[in-house]
Each structure stands twice: as C-alpha cells, then as structure tokens.
Image (tube, rainbow, N blue to C red):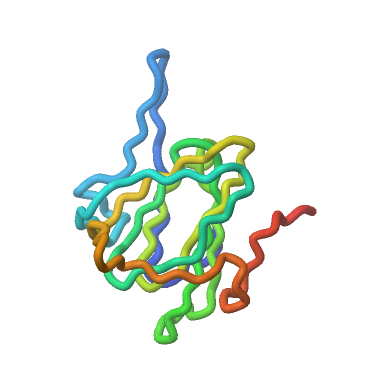
Amino acid sequence: MAKELIHGVTVKKLSIHCDERGRLMEMLRADDKECKNIKFGQIYMTTAYPGVVKAWHFHHKQTDHFICVRGQMKVVLYDSRKESPTHGMINEFVIGDHAPFLIEIPNFVYHGFKCVSDHEAIVVNYTTECYDYKNPDEYRVDPHSKDIPYDWARKDG
C-alpha cells in the first residue's frame, strides 16, 4: 500500500463477511464517507490474464473506482497534473482476493494495472460517467512509454 497518496486518490479497505453459506462484500454505498465522487455513470468489469499490463490512460471528466474481485492486480497511478501538490508521484497497490480494497481514481490521473496472480484477474469499475462511444473520455499512453517513470517488470528481492 502506498505510504502517501496522490492528491485526490482515496483507498477504502473493504470488509468481507463470511459464513458457511459463502461471503458478502460491500463495495460502495451512496452514503460512503470515504469516497469523494460517487455520481453514477456505469459499472463494468474488465479482466487481465497473468502478466498482462493494461495501461496507461486517464479521463478528463470521469472518476474510476477499481475493485479487484478475483485474482490479484497491481494497480499503478501516476500524477502528471502540473498544478497538483503530488505532481510526479507514483502510487502502487496490489488489490484482490488477499487485499480487498476500492481505489478511487480522480480524473487526469494516469492509471493502469497488471495481473499478478497465476490466473485471470477481474476488476469491477464503477465510473461517474457513461462511456461515450462517439467521443470517449479516454486518453492513452503506451504502457512502456518513457513519458511515465514506471517499470511494469516484477520486482524480485
């Protein structure tokens, strides 16, 4: 877990309630005090196979709320906002089966993820805007671009 968060990023530990029937995990509530932007746009799921990186992109209007519901994802954020007090900062999180967290990612913050489990990982994303097929609010950079100072390689040691 990142020691210092990028300005505007919220991380919420999720509680899992288990009994002999199964489990229940609340993800986000309308009265949630921890998340700052809960306007409803849409909810979708996305997956990645082991070792696959899906990065980098940001949004002008949209706030994302990532929750990994199966497997483990390394989620990385980069603050390129020149006016931000955390300009240039990287946050790295591993979320999923063993670390149930929601990450609220504000607009203009680059983000992406890499599957670090040995099986397909699933992320549910609650967004504040609907996807506009004709004019997508999505701005991309190659995952291995030198424009963002981050190396997606596994860090052994």
